[in-house]
Image 1 (cartoon, rainbow, N blue to C red):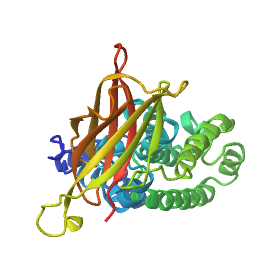
Image 2: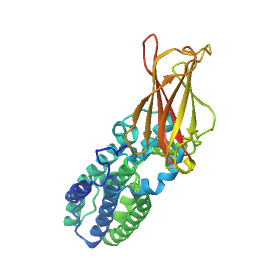
Image 3: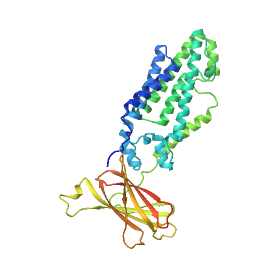
Image 4: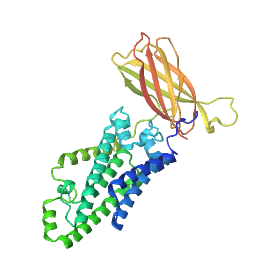
Length: 365
């Protein structure tokens, strides 16, 4: 077994390129001038660097949570790049969504939020700069809807990236940055009141600070996207086979696929085989029609076995017992203590669609 060839991480060139592209893109809109502008922009830039470091460089969040994630979702290779879209991956596993993560609802929502944030930045900073040059209150464009659209734009961009690729570091940074933007907004308002007096107070009275009025639908959609992962995480740990644990049954297209595993000890092997790193296992599969309970006749039955993070391999199964018993076996050498995904493929004897049932297996030490 060899690891998948396309590298999912360690792509440090992409870390640098993506960080520079997004930071320079935001800089072209924000054009910070004061020390306060640079502090807010620097914090936003640190958020992007932390994000892309985990997205393409080293998946620290996946690494720290890999044991817990693998125990709850043993069929997922969390070190593959697609699985790094954690919200889409977890929700998809629970609700059975077979959607490319780049086309899923979380990714689409993230695109909309990121694009909306950059558009808001682009429209806001030019108006603010012109108002400051004329020593006036910025009240046109986005400033007619909210008092601080530039900070709202930064927050939308960060929220979009969190939906797309959440990490422990960016999740920790997000509330800190939002609080920092809130403090900066309040300080700017005090300075505006000192400079413009009642004129700014009237503007503040009719214009919300961050969120435009009538944004209830947006809030409901965002709340729904956040609730779905919580539902996924609350689900019970999926059942996994262990040696001698008995039979586990899955149902696929009207067929009951039952699997059991036995550890095979070689009587003539040197040393104690129970302590071997690699051990032979006997997989037993029984196939029956769900409605009648009769043995299902198959022309071909195979096992696809995949260790987490590695390519799988296919093992043909042979019929055991009488030819019409619907029972099959195969022997496979597996590493002790590692999680495996087992796919049973069964092709009906009379032709037709190949059926598939998935199991999880771990030989516990």
